[in-house]
Length: 150
Image (cartoon, rainbow, N blue to C red; front, top):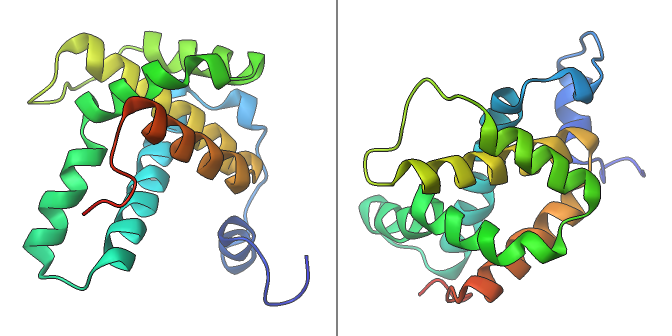
């Protein structure tokens, strides 16, 4: 990539160099941990880009899209779009045994959301933001979410 056009991942790795690790060795819950942050950043960015509003209003809009229930709907709609590798990562994430559960979601929805986040984390650590954005966009459209966020 050209100088000034590095991905966020490349910039982070450049600023905080460390030992490179094979992403296949990460636990599915570690992938989901990273994927949750990536998904949250995407949704927050889209919400903020749509309107400059008070933080509490932005939070209420964002929560509609980052909840386990919303993510479960999105990943259910996305299943047919996953590659074989993405499907395998999703299954690993969905079948992982989390230490906590969401307050306002069924265990099934929480497990689906964890699988979805694992896929996003895996793609992020592979450096494939383009695929992440494609999946999030397709998933939201397929799940019937309002793309305008407002």
